[in-house]
Image (cartoon, rainbow, N blue to C red; front, side, top):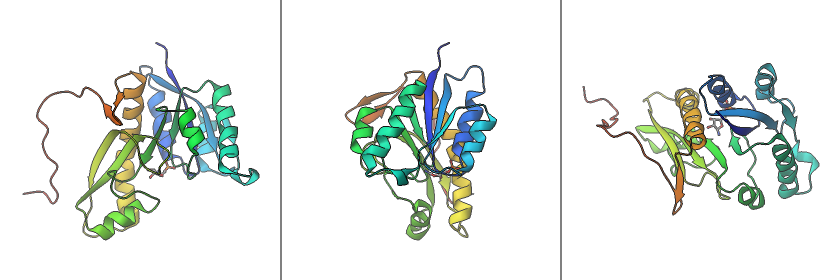
Length: 217
Ligand code: GRF
């Protein structure tokens, strides 16, 4: 089986990276991580990568005159690693149009809300402030605009009455760790087509119950 080679970009904790590392450890998973790049030298996620024997690189954004030259350096690392798909996993830099177009349809991101609701860095606070009963997470193909692009996988997660940003973030994070490997699998198995800026794929038929919160009984 030939496995899709992925490069993961991180800035911090790296729990989604860990979920991807764990998924890739299964012999039948159709992708492998060939490189992890961080813009922060002390990102915890780099330790997870090293522990798994994955090549790492640090590209500190401070040393570049503009966003595109920083992105070009990241691109160099990715190209020389042989990466075919780029996974943003808590990467806190907005990528340039140049990068997104160079890797057109081959950059994915995970965001802790049901997009297109609550874009931006404070998605959990926005969900609590809006009083929604359900929030969740989204894995999507990256476009130059922040938190936009064809949606691959979403999970809905209840917002509890007493939630603060941390408790909601923890509940959503658990769903993220299931969604990201699933999205990578769908792409690696060539089960997704982008048509008119929507990700089209065949999903199993059958009855799907609505998720209602609060529960009806
Ligand atoms: C996650 O909540 C992800 O959705 C967002 O940044 C966070 C990264 O967490 N883009 P981690 O570094 O993967 O633990």
